[in-house]
Every structure is written in C-alpha cells, then in structure tokens.
Image (cartoon, rainbow, N blue to C red; front, side):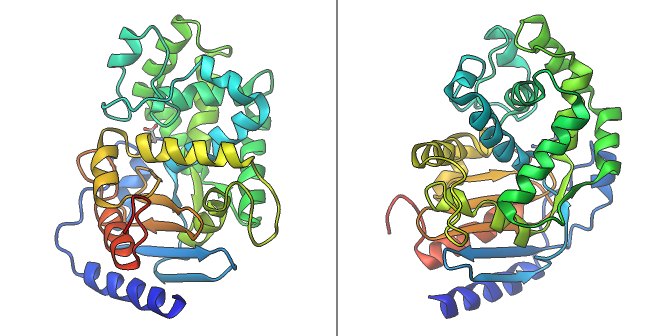
Length: 310
Ligand code: GLN
C-alpha cells in the first residue's frame, strides 16, 4: 500500500503542476494576497507513523479555518457538550462569513466551522482569561497534538486580520447583542484572528490531525487526545460543515471528513487509515482550495478511501 500511495502522490503532483485554472488566492487578508498560487504540497500520515509527501509539503502556510477543528477540540475538552447550547451542528448552506442566518436565528450560529460559530468557540476558550493566555494555550495544544514545537502564529497575518476583519467584527457584535458572547468583541476577535494565523506545513498538519483518523488516540504515541465518541463526532461535523456551502459537493467528490481554510489548506481524515493535508493557495467560489480539493478527489478515488464504500 505504501508503495502505491507514494506513486499516487507523485502522479497527482505532476498532474496538477501545470494546471492553468488554479483558483484565486484570498486577498481580503492582505498578506495572503502575496502567496504564490503555484505552490502545491500534500502529505499523508499513516497509523504506523509513515509520512509520505510530495511538493511543498514542508513549507508553512496560514492554516486559517483549519484551526477551527483544533479550537473546537480544545473547547469540547474544557466544557464538554455544554458548548452545544451556544452553537449548532447543522450545515448553514451559506458562505463561511455570512451573517444572514445569525440574525434570523437570534445569535445562535449553525455550526462551529462557520466564522460566527468559531467566534463563539473563541469566546468559550477565552472565558475569563486574558487573550494572550488563551492564544498561548491554543498554540501549545496544537504543538502537543502535532508533537512538534516548531508551530507558531504568524503575527503579520494575525495583525492584518485584526486591522481588516470588519465582517468578523460585525458577526462578533451581532453575537454579543444576542448575548452569545461573554467577553468583549475585540478581545474575542483577537483570539480568533490569532488562531487562524497559525502557520503550519502539510506534514505538521497531517500529524496534528492523526488522532481524528484513529478514534481520538494518537496511534504512534498511544496518547489519547479525545474520547472515541468525540472523535467520531468531530469527523461528522467536518463531513457535513467543513467546507461551508461547498460541503455537499466535497462529500460527493471526495467522500472523507475534511476542513478547509482560506490559506488554501485542507485537513482530511480517512478513518482507520490516514490523515491527509494538502495545500494549494488558489480558492474556488466557496473559499475552498480548488486544486487541494481536486488532489483529494484523485487521491481518495485512486486509494479507494471514500467512507461511503468502494
Ligand atoms: N480568518 C478567516 C476569516 O475569518 C478564516 C476564514 C476561512 O479560512 N474560511 O475570514
């Protein structure tokens, strides 16, 4: 299987290298507009610790909304199922940054992976701490699950989003007006924008997500990160909500739980088998990596990895 996987990753890298349609890099966060759209990396980690990668898989990029998976995991660990009184578990069918349903549904975000829901999760993590402490806690948590200390926040990206994130400020204010934030919007947004600015490579992300493909336990260190039930539920949310209003299409084409970010990364999990991270900065109309999705579609088809059968 490993030999076949290595060959498939190389094939995919070659096939996508010269693609002329690569999507559009996110330019609403100024530093992300500077990223080279020709970059492409992919890494797969298996349960015996084998890491197979191709392309720019060691280059760090802004993980953006992929961080919502880690923040949710941490918040569930602190507060358990009580978080579901403040955020739902349904796909929104709307863009990631939309405020339409938030107003109609009185400040209860549809799920923790759209911006409004992730801002509530940041508020839960902040609880009564200082934003700095909470940001430090998130970084340490991601370092621990990735078993890698070389993971940090890109302050340039974080500050740029703090300066320009007026839409997120609107969401936070709407949440606060509806009594679904305990802390002040600028403090919560500071945490949220910093967590989104985590810089990681595909190889680091594949390691960090491995527990989700192994029922909540890191199969290499044997370290349990979450309960079996919790891991399955996080995967279910990634499947149904991980690509916003593109989640149905992603399930249709790829067929594994995954979470995207506007930095062009996608973290995917193949239950019982592997964790995958891919990066291609150009995005489709839903803000999900265009070639990253294509790469996962090819990989999961060629390896027979859809969770829906083969
Ligand atoms: N930081 C980004 C935002 O809040 C994250 C969005 C994303 O990756 N989809 O807009």
